[in-house]
Image (cartoon, rainbow over all chains, first blue to last red; front, side, top):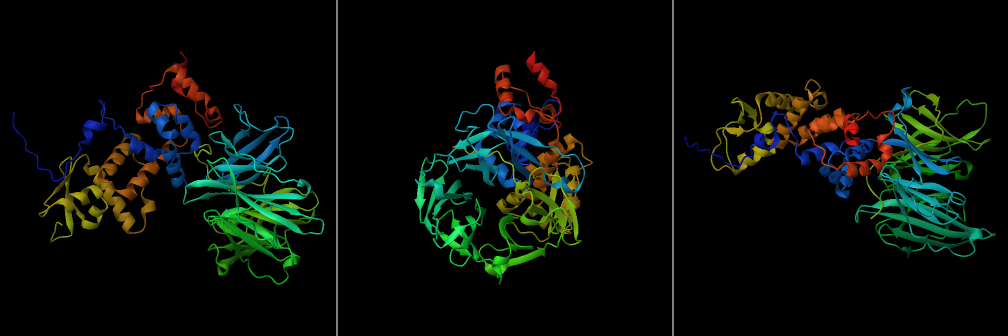
Length: 386
Length: 161
């Protein structure tokens, strides 16, 4: 047999012998399949776990969950509602884009508590609301009982946080929460502000506690600045910090105070200047990962977190002809293609929250038929259980 | 570092065709770039195993479009599933980051709305679970197997036999 000398500068793997089966159909190696999986939706990935053992290992691996999240660009909408007959909370999710078309939408409905649950939830006393959503994990709080849970509805994993110590004199007690992610430690944190307002409007004890996921304690951190009162039930996670809209006790002027999740320090984030602040309602939210402030009918976006000069007025909402009732705008849920927004408003008469789509380039309104105002989120395989 | 008097690199595909490509294009192929950098002398011709001329044609198409800022116009729609997988393997071997992302996304787009049975066939995977193990996994997160958008899985019946 002739000796064939092969001159190679770099050892070259012959793919043919590794990746082709007898019928010469290309077979992809697992690392390549992983790259494809990173671009698939969560629901399909959960199904693909039953294909074979190596796929199940791959998809169940927390490292894969993180990689999948980092490549995830698809955003969805969700809302949480309560079903009386079922005694459960329902998480409803649907894709973001069909809002402006009449294509029938694929809803995904997931329940809390799920069928295998054995935790603290008691349908007779629990009253959860959404604190926030981060990386596909929802944070729900029950003020009454002081329970907080972290929940990824897609993988049906629930983490019940240890109860934080509740002070006596709860009658005057108020709590506001925040949920976010610390990039430095690659971990999730929940913040609770506890304060007490006496009859003479004197604010006492703005105690702040932080829970780091994976530990089983609440840690007291530096007290919140005492000359301000939070306006919202929960803060907003932007710029690595939880941001609360607050009003100054002395002057009723509004501003934003943030608690940095990494170094646990506070900072005042100055809002845009308004002379007659007291006249209109303000609402703080998040839009495209930036702080979004609605001052009356003006919608502002803080394009560079922490920089007061970067507050940009996106648009002013004009008066909407609606003879039924007066209303106030509370939230910009999402902005599409830079000129269309999904807005939430509250009807003053009924206190019902509704949503509307407003194109501010062409000044066109369209009422939507959502049951509840949705929020934007990113689905993930990340588990809150460490 | 290999020096070359011309700006063209010669690449020889598995089916014997020689392509003279711009140095900039060869740079996008990390595998080729590594060969060039390791060589002491001038490289006359670099063999690229498992890459065929029809792959190179598409690679050059993509390169031309991306240089013109039109990489979004590149499409692999005309490739059938096996051709796409084959092309993906070639690009993976050549270690071309951007094109690799485009192709993995293209495969993901094709699989997104399909059933588990379809995906299993697509990758040619054998089920190595026992019926009990399989049932246990199905039960976990069973909501994912329900819904209007789920196609029935052909081998589900076989498992229950």
